[in-house]
Length: 407
Image 1 (cartoon, helix red, strand yellow):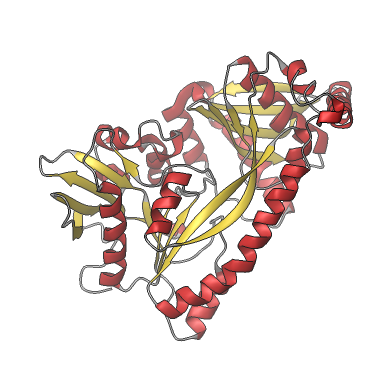
Image 2: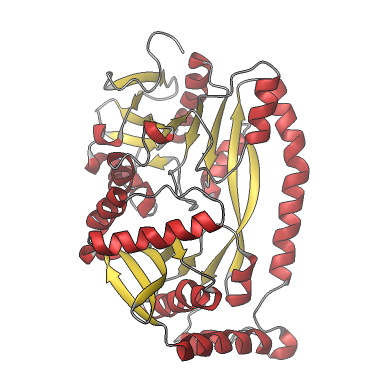
């Protein structure tokens, strides 16, 4: 990587490139603490809670997104001649692919089998947070060409340091289009979200479902109510070590039973809750006074984000009640537009959530690698688009012969 490796925290900034199209300076900052919160958030404003300075700080200051877990912050910032920050991107150098949501192990194996060095790679994403959003953060009222300058600077950085690849996880449609125009490859996925169609209350929502789906949903709710399970909600401002410990114990239990690594820590949970206050909420499903399930939600930008579910046993119906039915009730009562249900899960569609396409974008240093990946992505993307179309057709809402979707 040369004498001044990317990610060396001894340097405050490292020039990545300069823009010939505009008087912009482009630099790397090796930790979100090196960026003024007001400047970063001026670029991240309106783009969701997870690209905010506070959230990235909670990830990095807790060590969750730190070198011990293979995350080396290398955020890119762009300033105009006056010194005003007009663009930014959350960037991390990765020496492994664990804890990511777009697996690339076949690419790693193929690249290294051919004699290449896949790691470190550059990732533009929010660690541990599979939520679609802006990845190129542009200040409102900034000069034209900032996004293109940032994309050019990413490529220059990769060439300068011999990085095998750059990956962008969960870009919104605007950023995906920008990257595709610049020649990046796109990989599709299918996730789910609930959309508020102006429902007056939960009953109004269920009346829009097909008779069968409405019957199943209401039966599941009655079953949970009859079981004696009760729910306790703790706003972020009141979350202490005791609640955080129960939350993490349940999340870890579920991950262990599924054979997955659980990375969240007490330090991160407490920092996150302290920073976001009552926008964060921990919900505990309790039976006989003992927590058997838990959910972390985050509210922001007219959306309720379902972040982390944990459970100690087979609590399928409690899962549905906690994660889907109660969150939809909350969203309707508070006039929110969406409930973002996180990664995957076709069972969500049966409970009134609708499919949405998600994406990752990829750039490769070597032409042969790009060609090989492009060939592999073609059938994958065709499969995902077919899955998306099938899920749209498998709508849980009333069809015209049942009286239409409206109420």
